[in-house]
Image (cartoon, rainbow over the protein chains, first blue to last red):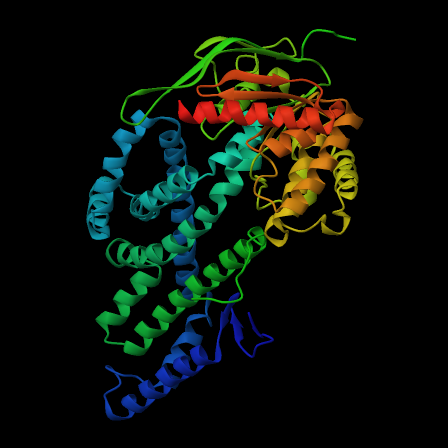
Length: 265
Length: 254
């Protein structure tokens, strides 16, 4: 999970944390601990209290199950949105007429708050898991569709003509040109949507589930257990960072052909 | 041996519509033919329809009127028939940035369903011929402009095409690299026996190639033609040079 890199940074979930980042996180913990000395526990619990609650979450399967359930819901929702968003992007890329119909609908969808989808899904559907899946798909699908469509549209005309000159089959054209062209956009969409999905799933679980991190946060709020609330929040953050790390590692491998400038802005 | 011409343009015209809706005629009533194994340089000013002619031969554009035949087939309508038969070197290298040099060279072979080991061996041999053996695994961003254009030449030749089309492939390179690559290109063309069409806007480049020379005026029509430049004396070359300049100047004035 962690490793010290050559330039003295800390590699956490595949992402490099510079010394300044480590100092900032340690500084936050120190400030929090100092404040906790002067404030009641239900407002600012001490760092050891939060750490204890964090460890407790993973000490029993029943408790850890909530974290696993939320993680699975995020990944399932994103996978569903990716599949449907990709299909929509392909259809829009192939037909300008369909794009003219779908684009405004996706834009309209962008304006619907996640909470509205929560209410709608509770009224429409019976099963908890399907409700959450539906909410996740509806809130993250537009970003996948837009990102993939933009990636496809940005395909180099020069490379398209060059490849076409070799008379490829449709499948070969997709495999050799289109897929590598849209791949960076797919990684970006997953990374952007992961953060959105983690926020949406908590809202969905808060209102319409009997398990998961969102449900647990609701439980902590009802008993004024701030240490528990923060511990469950950290669980979610760690999950998001871990998945981001996996995506970044795969992205780094898949896009290793990209040149990196020595000087940055 | 098939004595039919490799490329035939029969009263070909090609028009486009400008963004403001106005028509634009790039090629007008163009007729010429190119024999098998012949090297033809097409010369003309910028915007004279050279690249449109190139794209018509490549099958990337459909003629508005007339008929284009390459190897007896319509390159636009019978697009798939030409798989593996035509090699193209573009003005810019057009290398896929996600593929290493050897994978770029092997692209045409891969699309032509040549087995992986075989196509990589062929690609490696071509990179070796063009002095890039030590750069097989390099991605395009790690190569210089001249190296990248060498890779694109290797890519075009690797499939042993019957017809090779080149659209100002050396115009972006410095004079020394351009001359070296041009000589290599001519030698490779002679060895493989492919028919070559070389688009250029440089008189000296056209003369250096040494094949037949066609000069276009706008919209693409033949305004001047010279055969077998390789055998000409210096005085005859000067006469050809003067003739081309005169045609290009008249086109400019028009």
